[in-house]
Structure formats: C-alpha cells, structure tokens
Image 1: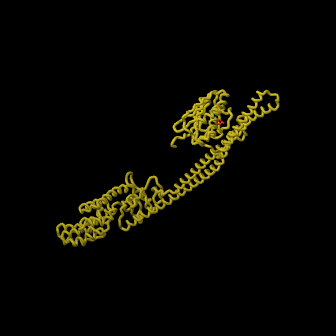
Image 2 (image 1 turned 30 degrees about the vertical axis):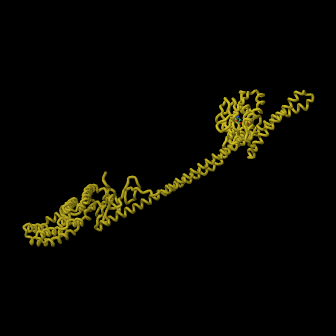
Length: 605
Ligand code: ADP
C-alpha cells in the first residue's frame, strides 16, 4: 500500500484513504450479516405461517361448507315433513305423485271418475236423480241423491255436491250448508273428470267462499292447472284478492311443472334411490328448483330455494356442497380474516426492522467515515505542523552553525545571518502561538479582553505590521479606511491577529497576482474589515468547508503551499467571539474577498 505524502511528510499507510472505505465496509458487513440472517429467518417464519394459514383457511372453509350443508338439508327436510303433515310452505313449487317413474300432475285418477260417471249403478243413479231435480221434484231428487250407491269416497263427495244443490233449490239452506261443509273437508285428491277437487267446487258455492278458498290454500301445490284457474275464478268473484298473487304464482309453477314432466325421466331413477338428495333443475333464465323424493318415495317435491326464509343463494363459483346437493355450489362467507391482518403486521414489522437496521448502518458508517476523515485530517495537521517547524529550525541551525565556524565573517553578512535567525525564530513563535491558541479554543479556555475603541487604529496597526513583508515580497498593498466609523468593542490583539491571518492567506494563495487590498467600511450597523486578493480563488462547494478545523482545499496547487488548516478556524472563532461573522466571496481564478463583520457601538445601544 502506498504512503501518501503531505508537504514532504509521509503519512502512515494505515491512514491511507482506502482505510475509511474498508472500515465503512466492515461496519456495514457487521450490520448486514445479522440483518440478512434476521430477514432470512423472518421470511422463513412468515412463509411457514402463510402455508399454515392457507391450510387453516381451507379447513375453516370445509367446516363452514359442511355446516351450511347440514343446515340447508335440515331446513329442506323440515319442509318435506311440513307438507307430509298436511300444511303448506311458501317455498314449495310443486308436489306431484310419481307413477312408474313418471310424474302425475293430475293428482287423481280422472279416468277412473269418468268411468264412474258412465257406470250402471253410480252413473245411472246420478242421472236419475238429476232428472228429478230438473223436473223440480226436489224431495224425490233428495231421496235419490241420498240413496245413490257409492263404492268410493270421491263418488260420495260428488253425490253430496249435487244433494246440496237440490237442498238449496228447496230453500233448505242450513242443511245445504252442512252438506257443502262436509264436501269442503274431503281430501283434495277427490277430483272430477277434469281434475278439479270436489272440495274446490264446494268452496265456490259456500256461504263464505273466501274463507272456504283460504282453507284450501295449503293444497294449491297439488292442484292441476284447471283446478288453479277455477280457484282464481272463485277468488275473483269472492273478492279474496290477497290470494290472487299466490294463485298466479302457482299457475306459473304449474306451467314449469309441465316442462319438468317432460324432463323427469332424467332424474326419476336417482331421486327414487337416493333419499335426502336434492337435485337442481331449471331452464336457462328461470329460477332453479330443488327436487327431492318424499319419504314414501311416491311423490316428488320441488322447492324454489329463492323463496326459502332466508333465501338460499347458490353460486357458480363458490364451494361445492356435499353429496346431498350434487353439483351445487355456495359462496362461503370469509369471516374476519384476523390471521391475514396478523401476517400483514408481521411483514410490516419485519420491513421496519430492515429499514431501521439499514438506517442505523448508514448512520454508523457515516459516523465512522467522519471519525476516520477527522483522524486523517489530524494526521495531516501533525505532518503540516512538523513541516512548518522544520523549515525555520533548519535555517536557524544552519546560520548559527555558519556564525560558529566562521570567526572572520564580515560584519554585514554577520548582521544578515543574525537577522535571518531572528525572523525565523519569530516565525516559529507565531506557529507555536497559533497552535496554542487553537488548543485553548478547543478546550474553551480562550478569553478576550474587549475594549471600546476605534477599529481604524486596529486595522492600521495590522496594515503596518504586514506592509513591510508585503513590499519585501513584491506585493502592491493598498489600505482604505472609513475614518468616521463609530467605535467597536474588541480585543485589538485578537482582531489584528485575525486580519494578519487573512492577509497571510492572501499572499499564500495569490498565484501569479501581486495585488492585495485591505478595507475598513461600514455596512448598516456593522463595521466590515475586508481582505481582497486576485489569486487562485475557491470553488463554491469548498467555501463552506474551509472554516472547519484542519480543512485544506485538496487541490494540487494548494497542497504545494504550506499550511495547517487552522488559520480560518481561528478567524471565525475571533469574529464570533465578538458577536460577528466571517464571510467569503470567491471565484476560482479571479480571487477572494474575506470579510470580518463586527457590530458597531451605536448611540443608544
Ligand atoms: P491554511 O493553513 O491551509 O492556509 P486556513 O485555515 O487559513 O489554512 O485556510 C484553509 C484553506 O482555505 C486553505 O488551505 C486554502 O485552500 C483556502 N484558502 C484560504 N484563504 C484563501 C485565499 N485567500 N484564496 C484561496 N484559498 C484560500
């Protein structure tokens, strides 16, 4: 590794510029390794947590589907039992008998009743009684109706209907009503040749048709189309309008039932062998029906799931329900996903840890870099001071040696050598003084003896001290002072030393220029001491840094000039200790103007 040379003094390789980089990289690595390990472990944990969470969610969904299925099945089976018990349910769309694997929508044997009407005993007896009734021999007709030989209960119901009509004609309304009531109570599958229940006919002639019709409403599910239209007609004439929507719905359901009738061969086998299975049936654009066999397997029940309370809503994309509902899917509510929120939080926490670690890494590396940079500057300072000390010491030793060995030296030359020894030892004292001053400032021990006085006198004293040196070095040195400036409260030695520092810099960094100016002027409530040169100037980005201790602009040109990087630090300290500031205005290649701004002692302040 190369050693770096400052003003002829070699720095130890450990202070080479690569060192900070290495240190920074090392401290980053110390942070980065645990950070990477923590991140790796964190991500691994989160991944596992994610997998577990997915499994838990899947399990939860399955359980929820099973729960929904059981609940659905229980509700639907309850509807079946309700229907079996003789009551109705709003969601039932159809109840139809199954005969030889086919649906029987008529719910009765109209052919059989037609045959009864043409039979010799029942049919002939009915006709005879009707002849008497139409001849208004009502007593005879009544006797005949009462005596009709009935083989079956539906035949009795029909005969009773005709008997009630005759009794009404005879004005025996109370008896007629009793008979009508008895017909109203007959089962709804006692029907005539058109499939219309006798009970419905009885409702049409009842003294309270609306009430009678309402009592039959639980059987609408089993009514044929003809029966439903008849019921609608009775409802209209009886003014039971509230039944109209129900009847219209049943008429619609019946129309769909006709389509199901044609389609039924597809399901019949399955429905009759599998108990408690509910199959979906429906045509495009129409509400779906759920079909199932009644417990005796001799009838089909169709339920419209949208009419259940609460309505059952199947979906195309949700979870498949179990074997009781083949092919049916339902959307399972997700529930509050607190686990997912937990994972999100853990990701955030991990992210925060990473960001904080990187931030800490950045701050530490910046700090390490600063410390190393400062150590490097201190080393540069030691090298510069050593160099500054060595030059005058060498001269002093050399001229003292010359005087010692040359006894017969000419008086003029002797005086010149002694003068050089004196100048160099003064230079040495100045340097030592500067370092001591800096040390006092650093320790906070430097004090200033401030006195109210004319700044013009201080500036002129500094100009006098510098003037001889300037002309000796071939510089044109101009001084301009505003004589009417109010007093300032200053430590004249410290201010003069600060001015001399600036003038000395103006000489050192003048390049080819040989012109330096010193001005004292007023700007508002301040006195401004300006040192102007036309030398190398300072780049804008360096202007803020040059007041830092040990800082020297690292240009080739500058490093040829001896210096310690302390001069401007001391100037700034003096200015600030007097309640003022130091400013610089500079352009590379055009020169610089340094200004010490100090507050004036104005009347009344
Ligand atoms: P140094 O002992 O190096 O002169 P200073 O603190 O006095 O230390 O100055 C700091 C740096 O500021 C110098 O190294 C130099 O690069 C720059 N500088 C100071 N005065 C001038 C000037 N008049 N013209 C150009 N550069 C200057």
